[in-house]
Structure formats: C-alpha cells, structure tokens
Image (cartoon, rainbow, N blue to C red):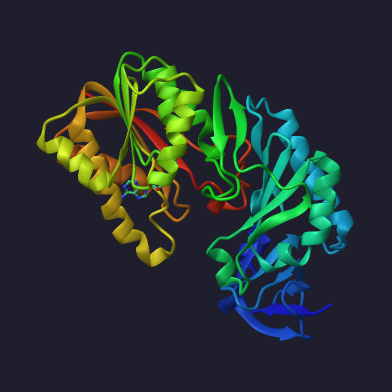
Length: 393
Ligand code: SAH
C-alpha cells in the first residue's frame, strides 16, 4: 500500500485522532497513489498513524478512515460504519420523519453526508475518498434504509477543491418527487431535495425551532434569513401574534408561503418579505419598529480563516441592529453556522453588539446542532452550529 510520511513533529494531531492531514505536514509519498486510493500514514520515524483516502488536489491531502492498522478499508468497513451511524439515530428520540443519518467525520466517514427524508435518502459525497467508494456506500445504504430512492446532491463548492465535478441525480431506486413533505414534531414542511440548500432542509436547527416556539407566545417575531420558513412556522404555531420572515431569495420564500399554508397559518399571521436583512434591519431601526423575538440565522459568513475578521464585522452589524430593535424583555436568537467561528469569539461579538446598542442583555440558553448531527470529540470542527438566546432589559 502507498504510504504518506509526515514531517517530524507533525504526527501530534493524528495521535489525538484528528482525521485530517494537510499538505504542509507531508515529508514524502512512497508509491504512486491515485485520487481516492487508500494510503497508510506514517510518522517520520515510520510508526503507523492511520489509514485514509488520498486526495492530491485538496489542501487536506488525506482524510483518515481508521487509526487501527488491522482495519481493512473495504465494503465491509463501510457496512459497519454506516450500520453504526444508522443505529445511533434509531436510539435517539428524533420526532421527525427527516433526519441526518451520517454526519461525515463525526460518524467516522469523512466527506459523507446522508440525510433521510421519509422514504428517500439524499447524500453528498464531499471528498475523493467517499467518491471512490460511492458504489459500495450506496449499496450498503440501500440495504440499511430500504429507501425507495437514493439521490445525490454533490453540487457543492468543496467538490471543486477536491478536483471533483459537481453532480446531482438518482443513484439508486426511483427519483424523489420535486417536493417531499416531512413531519417534524407537530409541524409539516415541504422540502425541495433536488434544488434546496444542502440536501433541502436545515435539519440541524430542529431543536432550536422548537425552542423559538416556546418563546414566541403573543409576540411580534422577526425571522431573519428565513429560508423556507422553518422558524417562522414554529413561532406562529407557538402562538406568536405576528411573524415576519425575511429572505433575499424569492424562490425560498415561495416555498415558505406553501409551508405556512400547509400548517394552517394565514397571511394575517405571517408575512414573507423579499429583501436584504442588513438593509431591512436598518429600515426598522429608522422607523423605530420593535419586536419581541428576533431570529438571526445567517448563511455561513466564514469559508476560510482569513475571512474571520470580515465575518465578525457582519455578525456584529446584524446583532447590534437586532439588539436595538428588541422591546424590553424581548429575546434574540442568534446563530453562527460557521465551523471556523469559535464559540468564545461569537459570544464576544454578541456581547459587544449589545454593549454598542446600549442594551443590557443576559444569556438564557446556549444552543447547538440537533443530536442527529453529532460532533466527534477528536474533531472540534464538527461542532459548527452555535446559538445564543439573549434577553434584553
Ligand atoms: N433559518 C433557516 C436557514 C437559513 S439559511 C432555516 O432554519 O431553515 C440562510 C438564508 O439566508 C438563505 O435562505 C439565503 O437565501 C438567505 N440570505 C443570505 N443572505 C441574505 C441577506 N443579506 N438578506 C436576506 N437573506 C439572505
């Protein structure tokens, strides 16, 4: 088997079982591995560290499949890993017909996302390794899930970094319909698995949607970066007096409108506004409009480390404006889904925002991703979703 030999001292993260090897850590390569091939990773002194998938075009040249030298990477390996991932979700009390079955690195399968929407399974193959083993993975998933169809949504930017084309389409069984209706708790949602964001729905926000519904009763709610209206539906069903969804995409708002209707929420209760959150928050500030609950769930602002400062300014801007728009006793639900934004820094930005807005605020809850999105302890990047619920006086 080809081997990747690391520079002296670069074995530390692997000994802590972090599964990524960056190009600058490599001293030399023995043999001529092809993209996706299984390689052994050795310390400078020849000690075995792990066995993983080779991806020469990426900054992350190897993603580790196993830290055990006796593990063979074969269909059986994927059978065991996938069975374990699916078993975990069966044990969790997820009150939804949609859930994440495989959460990549955190389920020991770097570069593989698998989500279930009722009878359909939607996958993303995000790295050379999972691309290489696609056929085997799909065959195991077919058996494990008895899905009517397995659909691929590998139309994501990270594929470009891996030197892979962006592809979508049915991999197995029948193609899913354009919209799949899922039941999440008491609420129903239409999911566009073929064209929606990620695999169609923000499954990671499931518990946080419920949390918003608990704070919304009787209030005026502003749901910023609404996508297909998940938080808005929960707020309205939780008894909000009125909800405003803001998003800059008319396509997602059209689906939000359908979701409102599906849940029996009339246009008198929810308004969908097509616009830019940064501008609309300023407009509300200038007209002195106030809200009881504001949700800020922006897209990922940080895609690489050097964007952290600019992203911080973006978070500061919207959080500061939101604090200004809250009635005394109101609640801010503020999120960051950027894995590169540390939770401490995010909390500091939110604290600075309250200070600059001249509002006294206290944190009443910390929020994170739903439990079907586990984060391996050896992989801090896996804890990407951070949320704070703050009350202002
Ligand atoms: N809260 C949503 C997910 C938000 S995803 C949920 O739980 O389902 C981020 C959304 O922000 C996307 O729908 C995108 O269209 C929207 N968006 C991005 N930039 C925006 C901007 N400047 N103003 C308004 N919406 C924006």
